[in-house]
Image (cartoon, rainbow, N blue to C red; front, side, top):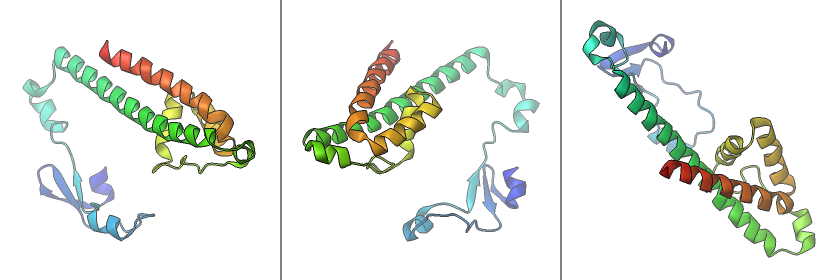
Length: 170
């Protein structure tokens, strides 16, 4: 599908090059244009037709179970790291709030990324702990009333961190 959409041509077995450059990317600065790849795409060859033609390459049930286990552990590691990143942000916010006067606490508003490098990481962490709709409400509350909401959310994220780390060990 990618090959047809971008009118790619084969360059080397798993790599394809695009005939036309994708200049429609939004939000890129000069460094992004310099270092990001818009010309090459990688396509796995093991998942192609040769697997069907050659049955020896098929995975057996044990390999599939091992792959699934590794994939689950990798996903858990990503969730733990995302959660930990949000915990660090919220810890910093809670420490700031504790040193403020009550008037400053009432006026405090946070940016949507909670002052971190990414808006997506805190949102992803909250969606994993809470349901998606509740996570959006919590993000909005963290933006408008961080002095009240941040300590509560921080405790919940720390509880989930402990739970997920126990799950990873056990």
